[in-house]
Image (cartoon, rainbow, N blue to C red):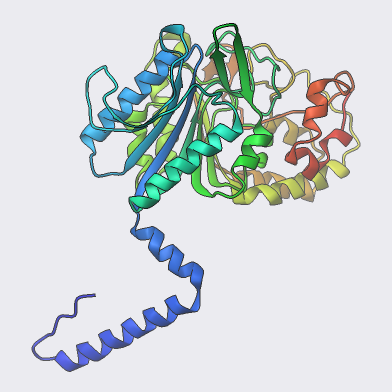
Length: 408
């Protein structure tokens, strides 16, 4: 602190300043965590984008990187952006690259290459953790702090490998992060298990996670990842192949306080400007600290239910109505009205930071009354298959005992 003396009040100002400084030293000395907090405020902001584009999304991934380069060209001092991309260049496997995004306005990717990797299965959680650790090492050396992650690829909520959901972002969407690794002899489709993703993040904590992937705004996904992020941004529906408008939203992601409302509104506005069925978008931001209490009240409500459940008229977020992604609002409406249900509804409002959407998705899925979060409801028909067995291992099921609430 620079101490300035005033002509008439020199000594008085000096004493007050000295007292103020001593108070700061005492406060800082009391708590090691406070020292860490003060240090983090001094660090430059950074984002890490993990792109699994070793599939039919390669073209769109490079277009999104171009948007990031254009943003840095206009905002050189806002923060750093690190991008790992595993591509299927010209439909052929390419070496994954780690970039630090540089200012550029051409159609080429001219960002600085920090590392060239041998061909990897980027949907493997071990590979993800290895790259994340590399970026953390780089940012720490530069006195930068990664405040948010972007996970970019295909997506299918919490569902296990080889569970199909209809999507126009691809012919079929599976798990999170499809890597179509090709060798001389064969091509292998690999997907990331949401449980293993959560385990790979167990020792990390970030301000936010943005899923640029289909169907990831599910209560099961949110609950699985709740301990590693303060906020999660995701879509309950498909995300069209062009993805999020990075040139517009990066400014909100790198502000001193992340502007989640702006991110949401800009994403939906971007697609509202399209024509016809491309006017299709939905995005939800949730506050993870509200999840445990929501699960507690949800479980309490379930234990009081006696009515049979009928999901035939419930909103589903995938086009084919596969019975995996029901709207949470329909489930809450099903619960018998009592004081606990009222508390649960209020808690759900606390959970949702913001939810923006177009009127319909592909002129097929009405979104006006939707709540922006999907939920799976177990049923007797499917209670012995692979998906059901996988579901029983999820943190959400363990918290609320959903498998004990099976409908016909």
